Image (cartoon, rainbow, N blue to C red; front, side, top):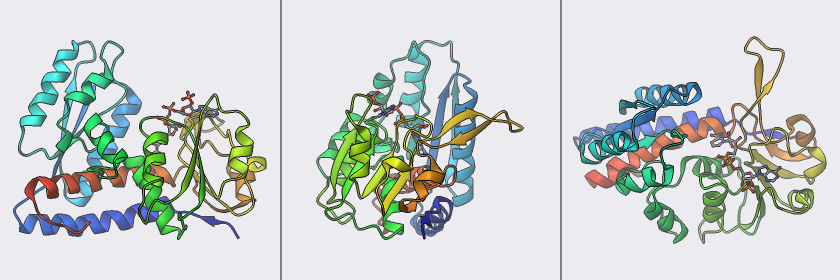
Length: 296
Ligand code: NDP
């Protein structure tokens, strides 16, 4: 019987723990504040930002939003970042990607105060993560770790194949899973678009994490018996639905579940975890800045 790993349920448990932690922070007069920054009016980004604001409300995090005109020079975004860096009420913030083409996203990330970088993308935070001293674990990889822990997956010595080497998912996840730690100690293979014989790498794995952004790239024939399958992908494909599309993962769910011992659905798997881990990082940010131990 294949276990369907319920990301919504795990995320809800994490939010409950965070609500308790936020109450403990309030006792110490520390109230977490998260800001979202959006440059331009990309509808998908607006949806993501709205969801993040709603998530904050639900657990008692004060949230603020800053809009920057998409046609403004990069300096307008840099000014907004500088203001947030200086604002003592804001403990963490994210600059929603993508930014307009005339803005260099790497430069944007470099300007974020690393102590408020709840995405965990600043080079200082990336370096700390690689060195095994993470200040903030990036939200999606951290969510994947939490899902694996919740499903009782033993990572010690496990062969993990990650499909995707992006800076926000594949690379940080690989770095986390090889750490000498209870939620690490795995042997990791990282695949990408130039990888030869992808199916051979996924078939031999104990755990496959798909983060390629390629709809249903991995089907059942690429999954070995008893494999744990974590599908990070979220892809819109044309469909005969009211909206004219549906969301599918990077894994062909029906054929993969026939071989997997456990698998995440899309939607309802990794997505809710990413959102929950942003709240987690915000609570962690205020606990570090206010020097209050909230036992996360
Ligand atoms: P990127 O496009 O930044 O990276 C995709 C990676 O997959 C690249 O390393 C690319 O290789 C590799 N890749 C693409 N096609 C193939 C292929 N056919 N075979 C092998 N490797 C391939 O994507 P992200 O990491 O940002 O996101 C990945 C997916 O996860 C997307 O669907 C995204 O929407 C989703 N996502 C979901 C989140 C969630 O919360 N559920 C959060 C973040 C992302 P190369 O480097 O060679 O180009």
